[in-house]
Length: 634
Image (cartoon, rainbow, N blue to C red; front, side):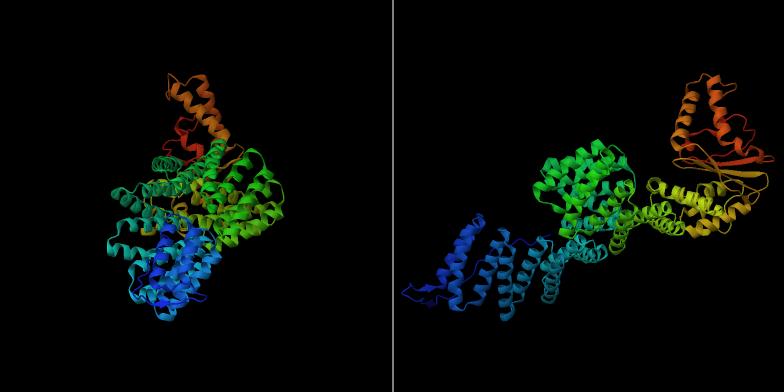
C-alpha cells in the first residue's frame, strides 16, 4: 500500500503584511493562500511545472513572513510535484526541509507525513533499506501519538519492503501485526490483502500448506466482498502453490480463472502475472512453444507498465524455454539480461533462480567450474533468503556435478542435504494427493542418489531411499498385511503417514524383522534408465537387482499389455490369445524370472510397484506360480 501524495490546503489565519524590496507590491498570507490554491488546481490537472512555479511564489511569501507551518506544507507540495516528475532527488530535498521544520515546531503528525513521503520515494526507487529506515521512524511516532491509520500504512509498507528484499520472515512479522489491527477494526477488505501477502511469503519459504490456507481465506473474503481484482490475485496465487506441488491441472485451472477476471476488469498487471504463470505450467509440462507464447505476452505487458521485477522473471523463464528449443548459448543471453535487472533492483530471489538456471546451461556446455560457481552463489543466496525450493535444487545439482567430477563423498553430502529439505517441505503439506504429486516432481533427485549409493557400495541403504521417495508404500502395505500394525509405531509410526527419515528407517527395520515365514516382498524402483528390484525374505534384504529397462520402455510394454487384455475376447481368462500370452510371458521374464529361483517355499508375495508398474496387473503374468500376491493401489 502506498501513501498518495496530495497537496494540503493551508489555512492562513492572519492577514499580516510584508513589503518586498525594490517597490514590490505588499504581499500577505492571503496572497500566498491564493497562489497555493492555484498551484493545487494545477497539480490536480497534472500541470506539474505550472504548479511548481505557483508553489515557489507562495513559498517566498511565507518564508519572508516566517510562517513555518505554511512553509512546511508548501515544501511538501513541491516535493510531491517532483515525485510525479520522477525527479526524486529534488523531491527528497524538499521533503527533508519540511521534515526539519516539523521537528523544529514539534508537529508530530507533520513529521510522520514527511517521513512517509521520503519512505515512499525511496521505495519507488527500490532503495528498500533507506525506505525501511524512514517507515520505522514513522511507525514509532504513529504509535506514540495513537495514529492507527498511519500505523497501518507503515506496517503494510514495511512488509512490502522486506518482501521485496526477500526477507520473508520479517515481512511476515509486519503483515501479522497488520492483520491483528485489521481484524480488530473490522476492515475486511484490507484483512484479505494481508492474508494474500502472508500466503505469498509462505510460498517463498516453501511452506505450501500454510500458503494455501492463507490464500483460501483471502479468496473467501474477496468473493464475499465482490473484490474481483483480489479474487483474481488469490486465484493466481493458489495456482502458483499447486504448480509448486506439481498439481498442474489445478494450477492451470486457477490461472485461467484469474486471467479471465483480469481481462474483464482491465487489470494489466494481473493479466501479465496470469500469463506468466500459465507459461510456467506449460514449461513444466514440456510444452515449450506454448510456454514461450505466454511468456512473451507477459513480457510485453511487464515492459509496458514498467514492472522491472516481473520483467526479470519473464526473461529468466524464456531462457529456460529457449534452452530446450534453441540451445544453451541463447538461454544464457536471456539469463544475463534477467540477472542485470535483478541486481539493479535488488531482487535476490529471482537472482538466485537465474544463477541456478545459468548453472544448468553451463552444465550443458560441459563447463563444470562455471556451473559450480553459479550454484554455490545461488545456494548462499537461498540460505540467506530462507528459500528452501531454490536451496534443494542448488544442492541437488551440486550433487550431480560433484559426482560427475568424481568427488563422491561431496556428492553424497549434497544429495542428502537436498533430500532432507524436500522431505521437510513435503511434511508441511496435509493433503495426501498434493504430497504425492510433489514427491513425483522430485523423484529424479532420489533416483540419482540411489544410483550414487550403489556406486559407492552402500547397498543396505538403497531400499531405505526408495521407501522415502515412495512415501512408505512398502511399510504401509506390509503393516496392513500378514503381520498387522506395528506394535511400537504409535502416533508417529506407519499409520500417521509421516516421512521423517528416522521414523521410516526404524519402521523399515521392524517390518523386515517381522515378516512371517513363507512370506516375501518384491519392491521395484523404476528410474529413467533402469529398474531396480529388491527381494525381502526371511529377515534379509538382498542387494538390489538391476534390470536394464528404462521407464519409457517399461511404460510402453505395460500399456500395450493392458490394451491387449482390455480388447481381448478372453480378457484375463485361460487361455489368452497368442499376442496377450507373448506380452505376459515377456513381462514375467523381465520382472519375476530373475529371482524366481529364490521364491521357493513362498506362499504370500507382496509386490510393491513403482512408476509404470502401478498400471501392471501382476496377477495376469503367466507362470507366477504363487498365490496370495498383493499389489497396492494408488
